[in-house]
Amino acid sequence: MRPRAARLLLLVMLLQPGALARAEDAPGRLGQVIPISALAGKQEEDPVVAWDGRHYLVVWQSNRQDLDDYNVFGARISPDGRVLDPKGFVISTAPSNQLFLDLAWGREEYLAVWQDLRSRTRWEIYGARIRSDGTVLDAQGISIAVGERNHRHPQVAWDGTNFLVVWMEENRANGWDVAGARISPDGTVLDRERILIATGPGDQAFPVLAWGRESYLVVWMEGGGISGTRVDSSGKVLDPHGRVLSRSSRDAGYPSVAWGAGQFVVVWGDRSPSAAHALSGVQVRASGAVIDGTAMTISSSTNLQTFPSVRCAGRSCLVVWEEDQSSGRPRQGIESVIRDVRGAFLDLSERPVSPRYVMISPRAIGNHFTRVTSDGRRYLVVWKDYQTGTAASLGRLVTPVR
Image (cartoon, rainbow, N blue to C red; front, side):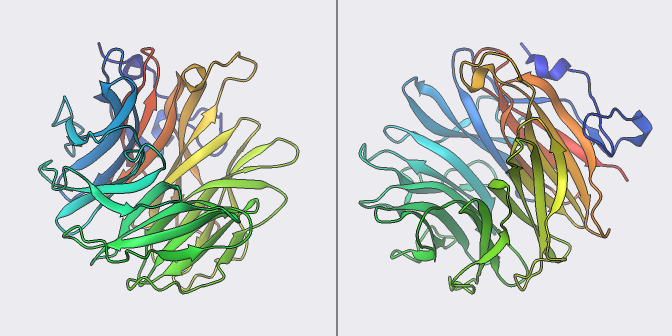
């Protein structure tokens, strides 16, 4: 049966979160909800998505093989939103768990990465290349970061020649560091000794990255704020001590970064001492300097707003996030939390940026782990929900309207 989310009425917001807009004012046209993977009694969750020039590829973690373990599956989505692999295809069924996926398209193949517990003793980083037709080139996986310490939450991007994978790495003396390695198109790990990107006292955690004009911008959480550094295509860290992108009285976390219109866009969730919540962001030049020097507020609310994801198509960027609507309700885990999937268009030609808001999936149970990619014209947003009692991976096409 089609998930109930497919039958929810479309709500659109403009100018202020929560304000309903006239249909003709809508900043984006939304397609039907796409049931990417929904199996009775199985958890099909935490989807991520990328575009290869012909199709979208969505990959997710699933316990369909073994209810105690999560493995990696994928499905291609046509430009008009048809699921081309309705049953999904296997990317990794290694022993134990594969979790927290990411995905990027290169020259002729995708690279999917994840944190992997096949050693049974520690988390390691593995990956696999996937062709545009869905052929998996590395059935046993590529071991990217293994060894005595834990490695978690990998992210990947492509620079035109190689992939760069970054992750958070356990430092038993100081918490967590950010490290990385380049992967060639043939699956060779070019930096077996890893690139140390951010180290020091305390945690440098949850890194994300995007390729710009001449370098990557790697961004992470640190000391209640958001920091970053550029890394060039040779793996050289261009800002060895990092750059503070945001450090204020708020508690900032879970950033996302994209490249568009000749600049990086970095977004994150903020929580102030008064318990108000906001989504904030900065625009960063290719040189690493923050444009205008201060953060912009993308959305503010008394509701929890968290886990943003941003992608750009030319001068248009779409930020998506989860907003908690469960205030006062008893909770029994993420499957009982009611959240909206919201979005905001940013026009990078404007100064200052004035967000235009769109409701992507209003008030559904378990809306979580929202991600977005673009084909250069439209956006595909993917997320998981629990309306059927177990996790399903859903998606929706969004076309900007000016």
